[in-house]
Structure formats: C-alpha cells, structure tokens
Length: 312
View 1 (cartoon, helix red, strand yellow):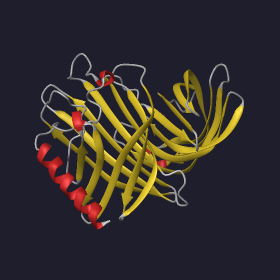
View 2 (spheres, one colour):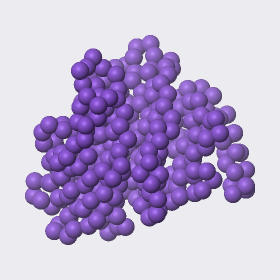
View 3 (tube, one colour):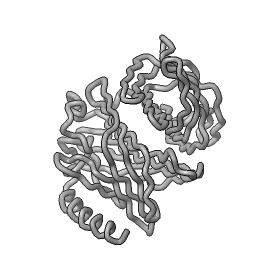
C-alpha cells in the first residue's frame, strides 16, 4: 500500500500542476462528439455523475460523485457533492458551491477544495481523489463495459472501477453519466443503474411521482445490447420526507411497451436532501441503494444497483 501511495502522490503532483487554471484538465471524455457544447455556452446546465457500486461486498459500498455547472454571461455557478453509503448507512461526505469565470469548456470537472483529479491523454479522467480534514477517498476508473448516447450533450458509460476508503480498496462497477441541457429546462433527470453478474441496465428520464413517467433504457446481457426507448416507470410506494414537505418514492415498477423489459425494484437504503425554493414543497435529491428483479425476454434476473431521483 505504501508503494501505491508513493505512485499516487507523484501522479497527484502532476495533476495539480496541470490543473492550475480552472477548466484545464477535466471531464474524461471531452474528445467525444456526444459532449460537444450546446449552441450557446451561456444559459446551459452541465451535469456529470459518477456512481460506484460494489456488488459482491458483504457490506455493500456505494459512492456517488456529482458535479454541475450552470453557465451565465459573466460566471459559472458550480456545485460538487459526494455521497457514501456502507452497509446501508449514508454519509453526506462533501458538498460545496462556488463560482468561476467563464471558460470555453464549462462541462469539465475542475479541482476544488479537497477534490483533485488525475487525467490521462486527451483529458481522459483516470481518478477522482478527495483529501481534507483527515478524510480520504479515491475512485479509480477502469475499462468501459458498455456505453450509450442518444442525443448531443449526453454520454453514459458503465465501467469497472475501484474505490479506496480508509486504505482499503474495493472493486465494483461504475456508471459515468454526462448530461447537458438548457438551464430554462427545469425538468431534472432521474436515473438508475441495475446490475448482476452479467447484466447492466441503465434507465434515465424525467420522473413524476404522481403519474407514469417515460424513461429511456439501455442494457447489455452476455455481450448482447438492448435499447428500450419508451420504458414506463411507476412509483409503487413512497415515504414522507418532512423537511421538503413531500413524499419521495422508495419502490418502482417499469415495463417497455412490448414487455421485452419488465421489473420491480425497491430502495434498501436512501439518503434525502431538501433544496431551496419558494415552497410550500421544496426540491429533493434522493439517492438509493436498490435491489429487485428484472425480466429480459421472459427470463428473470435478480439485480442490485443505484437510483438517483431529483424533483424540481
């Protein structure tokens, strides 16, 4: 471990040297056409979520890093969050909001406070690191296992990965998500990654807890690829969250029109945060460790994973 730490420290020194200016090294996939900026840089919102799940650990580990950038004519409003769950106990590990001057690539992740990054050629993200006040966390990205994109400014990749917490490395699966949209589009995105030994299913869309919602879905099963453009998602059970004065879903069912994909999942543990707003109901961010079953082409499979839910 000491040798690994020495190599890591050297890599970190190189990264910090390269990252002196905001926006220098950044989002791993800036070279990908799917991440080309929208027509105008001002008035856009860019999000990137990297969520790690250790499927085979006896005490499941979930780590989610979330970054956003809202661009204006004179500044970029940025936010970074880290959530961590071990054995169903959630920790709001880090949260910070700050402002930077306008840059040509506002979607890039930039170092801030305890967060540092390691990048490879063409700004490809290799690792996210957090060190501050005696707390340390590392997430190392591995090979891509699957990837999808259906519109400009969107890219989803499932990757092998490892997380180092308290000097213990845990191998698992990572979903790396980038979204771009006009800031005037107030509809937030919800998403879920569901996995088993040989399955990866990703669902994303604008979720309405009061009605059926239409998500887009993709999947891989034993090297086969699937595309489900219209998956109907319905909340089947909710839990009251008094700080936001609203109910938050904790169980869901979903089905594609041809029933090629069906499933039910429920939250085993959930972390909820209330945002700011005029009221009486406040916005909510909820992230859950979920498990359940899905059926692909009539064959059922047990799955576990992560669900991120956000209300306007």
